[in-house]
Length: 252
Image (cartoon, rainbow, N blue to C red; front, side, top):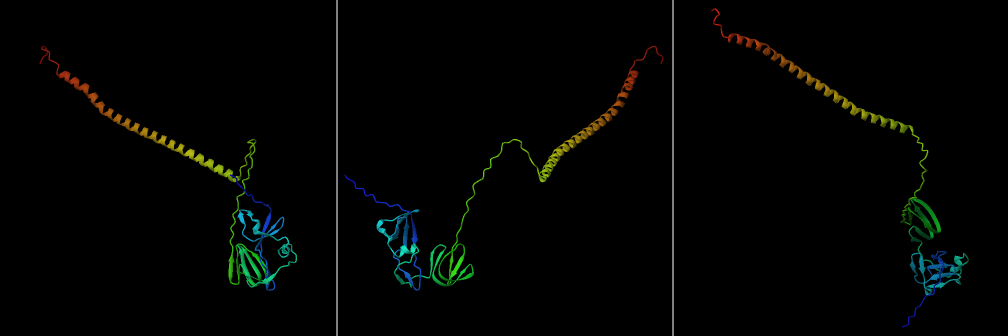
């Protein structure tokens, strides 16, 4: 089995894509057969058919482009020379044309336009680039809004020095704050001490009162018991006298 592989010939060139727009001049325009051309390193080419695009890369087949190196119209226009072009009527060309976001072409315009409610008179051919403003032309308004997002700046790293010979400078406000904090801490420490001192005094007074009450009751009890102790021997002596037997020789 034989395989036949066809490899295309590739000519790699750096080119600029240019859009061709006809400009009115005395009721006529230059007849140009291409809307887009390629201004490359090795020549100028007109694009007949669509070329495929891959991101920033554009690939055109050789049969889709036309070499314009010998063209006396487009080639001379790009080189700012007197062109040799065929002219046609310009009735089909619009006077006001929006080319893209924020781009307006005024083709042989004669009149006023309003930009942010400020009127300006124009006469001729103009390309207007605008962003975040409102433009009014012949009663038609155009507005283009563009939002930009700023990227954060990279962090700036400042290496710290070795922790040697560190000297601190305290401001007056910092000294006042430190004094206030120290005073507050001392007050908090004194408050528990006062509570402990007051509790101790209360406990001592309570114990003294209990002791006085107990002592008073003890003295009262002792006084009540003393008369009974003194009368008991006398009663016992009387009992012994009355209970003693009489002697037979004793006179009655």
